[in-house]
Image 1 (cartoon, rainbow, N blue to C red):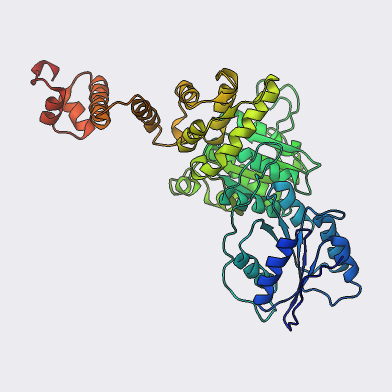
Image 2 (spheres, rainbow, N blue to C red):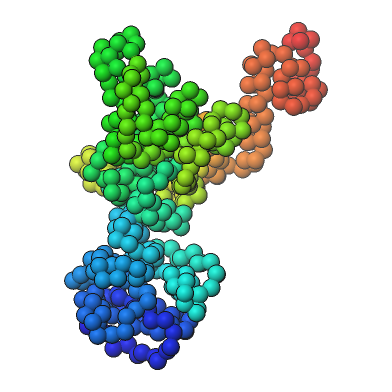
Length: 486
């Protein structure tokens, strides 16, 4: 039914609010009325649909997703069936990919995360009504933190503002037949984003094919991408359909695109431009309809400047760019991610779920995570298997961090600080004093030892490599000059 909330006579543009939460209806309606809009509020979709036949028509609609009876997405479909041009802003406390993609697939103008900033909602209303007298060019303020954890079945999780923005972008881009370039450090979940873009797109019932271009030897990559004819090279005993043919009608995810050899970049450019290619050793022109989603952890612009990546290929791939933030930039997501991974481990092990103590969680939140979400997931599996008891202590986390294999160099240039941080924490926990002096002494000792080993004991060369004077190095070593080492 229509709500009994007070209505004010306004001459402004009419906006409808549909939400079963009375507090949301009230505060949003008041904010919009104060901005000069005429507002009508309803506690359900059926009441709003009935009012379409008797009340003045709205110029804009705000609707919640999760409501008793007809939900917001069903209401959106009904509104668009009557007036395809009516702007509808979908609201939800669940800022996940399924909700955002469903809203944009249904024709929503925008997706607004709850709880939201009222100034942001008013500004969004003004932007949705470009012909209204209240329209301004003011930017929409960032909304407040969502109250729930967004998730999909593949653990693309996050509640940080950057992740909510990413989920909204995925929901919108899934419907557009555009090439997408996903950037981010190793372990941030670039393939999960690619799969979400495919899963929520009109191509969802067609194949999703993934290929890591860095994992295939250069001499085999061409055949993997474009296929080959029987007899085209030694060992090619039969015709092979490449990844482009396998993905026809669907999506092809090319991971680590920055490592693709230059000759294949030229062939890939032709496929993106023309949608056609020849198999290796073939004469038949193959035509395909494939959405290409590429990903890289590298700076492609720098590769272009170095002549290692084609600028025209970058322009073709980089129609829309999505950046995945590293885990260290969204520490507020660590608790939810860890809980999710520990729950998965408990299910796999058929054991009770383990939980992090407050100190253990604090330790996770201050770790730099050079391996990002993948590193956290691996750590949680180790903790689920090895930590004694149901409560995971900070000591358990430290032990697992020390046992973890070192992340690759590409995960970050500061990886060497992690063992130093762990050593410092252990020294502090043990009540040690003069920790700075100890660390400085051991730091210099490690540098000098490594440099002398590298130069086979030649002090002059070691000093030059370290950027020190010969006498300074000798003094730090604490012994007199030994001419035999020269």
